[in-house]
Image (cartoon, rainbow, N blue to C red; front, side):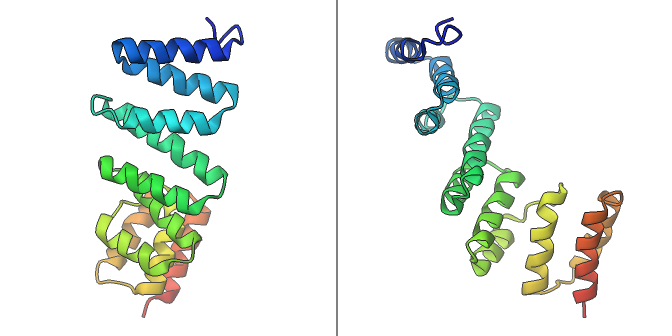
Amino acid sequence: MLRDAGRFDEAVDVCDQAWRTYGTLKALHYKVNILAARGDLDGAEACAAQLLSCPDLPAEQRRQLHHRMIERRVMLADWPGVEACCRAAVRDGPDDDAAWGLIVAQLNQNRWEAAWASYRQLMPGVENPDALTAWVDLHLRFGITPHTPAAVTTLKIRFGADAHALAQLARLDAGAP
């Protein structure tokens, strides 16, 4: 009610008091949302980091918080920050989107070898077209493995209706020995 009335400072104070008194995760969750609504994105991110440090936070909420932090860093084009947020998300549990975020952040910093090492370590699936360009670029730069042709066939089926994805895969076909 306080947030809806525009009384953000009071709403944050109530959340802080509930957190100190009862240790309720919901209080921190509300605080993140209030800070974000107020436009205090740095405060919201700091509170989200505090919330992520709580071991009782359910896995799906952890994943959502990680992704919100990653999205903010992407919007700022803060590639080292994206990389750090993605590493934290991957450490927290398997997450192909965060793994690709890590790889793309490394590519955006022109750290190809690190991106290839991350790909080889994490082996994220290519489930959306956004990851496909990075996957193709990495394979063109570091080599087409014996498993690549079968993967290309699977990806052509998966993304058969996406002209951009098929064009990316054609680049890989053209680069094959």
